[in-house]
Amino acid sequence: MRYIPSTDHDRDAMLQAIGATSVEALFATVPESMRLRRPLRIPPALAEADLVRLVQGLAGQNADAESWSSFLGAGCYNHFSPAVIHHLVSRGEFLTAYTPYQPEISQGTLQALYEYQTLVCLLTGMDVSNASMYEGASATAEAILMAHRITGRRGVAVARSIHPEYRQVAQTYANQAGLRIAEIPVGESGTVEPAQAASAVSEETACLVVQYPNFFGGIEELEALAETAHRAGALFIVCVAEPVALGLLRSPGECGADIVTGEGQGLGTGMNYGGPALGFFATRERHVRHLPGRLVGETVDQEGRTGYVLTLATREQHIRREKATSNICTSQSLIALMATIYLASLGPRGLAELARRNLLMADFARRQLGKVAGVEPRFTGATFNEFVLRMKRPPARVLAQLRKKRILGGLDLGRFYPEYADCLLVCVTEQHRREEIEALTAALGGVR
Image (cartoon, rainbow, N blue to C red):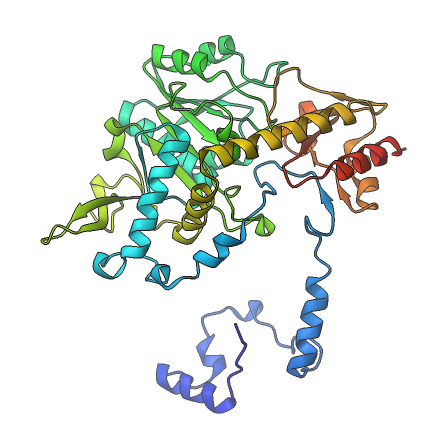
């Protein structure tokens, strides 16, 4: 978007239109101590061509997955985005109002969201999906609130192997709703032990929440955990931060999940320096009236033609406040469309092949890095495309030395888990080449 400066005449006209005598008067409500009384410390104005060159130079200083070797994951994954995605999202059929209140002029958006919901149901093994949410963390927190509404209980059992930032968001939501969260520890396999989960679930528990694959890349025993939750009358919630894994793993729905939430960033949107993201949310049909957000449905008009409408919209703007299930205001329509195109273009076979490629590359990396002196796997269980390495040298020092070689070697787990302060979380996807993994292995072996 081009920057068009306003002239003194423009500013005077705007002030006159709003009834302010000056810019000072406009900001009179700002305390004097908070106002800047000197000019901004910025360089002189540049010609447009010079400004473009300056900004391009600044942008070129960014480190990204193209110019560096990045083995970071932890909820944001480097997957390839096919060119068809960016080609199709700019078509006129989808360039309608972001909120499809008028279905007669929003059929492109509504049909895309309907297809998105269908694909999320196929991916998760659930009956019904909403039209998307903001991102995985708040979607998971909303699922906890939904379980509370359904069961009337206030206890929540959350696996410590869930993304730590997801747990922080859930705690914020729980504090406001008067819910009590109990954490379930991680076993030596890198997953939750069913016996530990059973001790954390009681008749006062609304839900048991786990991640699949979990934050460490481990594959939780969903069927056993679902049985534990259901035996106590609690709901079983599964959050998925890496949906590509579902191309290979059994779906949460097949394993007994009642609600499945997650992060759709890995479905063709790119990492984008951390955002925007896409939260997905699916559940059993019997719980559809408790679903937050929007639900797009298919119908026919008076002439029998297929049409798409908002079937459910359960926030207070649409229905009586006391019946609202959430204050979620909208859906991530554009990102949901990108995920729809991604999943439709790959298909079940393509997604399975992609997941298998991720698994094989990560397994190769884990074996190679495990040969480095002073490096060993921390957990014994199976993993998908992430794994944890225990280091004899301080992880922060290791990562600093790797950065000198333009390698982002992983995440220092001490940031979130004091008990794993000597560990790195390493992520490998289909985007990594064998040469990159070998270069990381060599660089890690040279760290002193």
